[in-house]
Length: 187
Image (cartoon, rainbow, N blue to C red; front, side):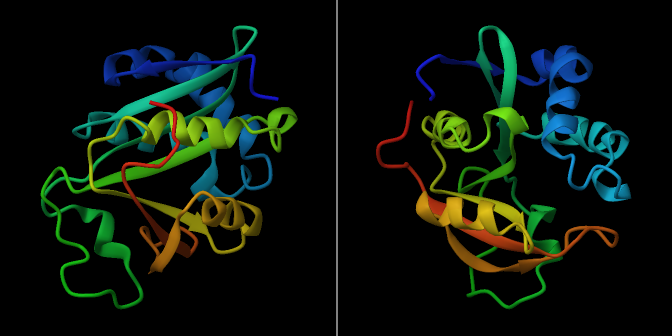
């Protein structure tokens, strides 16, 4: 049930202030299945996060129930010459990777603590983050072995556009795209 959910939006300065107290703990709780792998360790996430937060158009939405954080979603607008597309391992149509700084929102992470998964929190967070975006489209990477997430994104209107491996030690991901604005999303 999502009726008791509240959302808070945070800019980079706010996010830095809650990195250790909210963002990393939610990450750890929601990544128990892979947290022991080097790429997914809490330390690596905490190292990557400031890079996300410094990007233009960065925003993070925290979901809470009874004041307790239960999930989060964040991303940023891809800049001109974005490195996001450098890890593509499959061909894409001409112009697909062209960025203007306002064309594509990189939906970096969507995470929900285990006890709240399957209760609509992820979809509500997804819509809360993307509902107010001005970009033409959004993109995300989802692990090839994360079938439940891939099915959820497909239900929410995302389509597979290719495959990528963004870092030498990262897993392979499906690249997904959705057109914005979302229809019926929370603003």
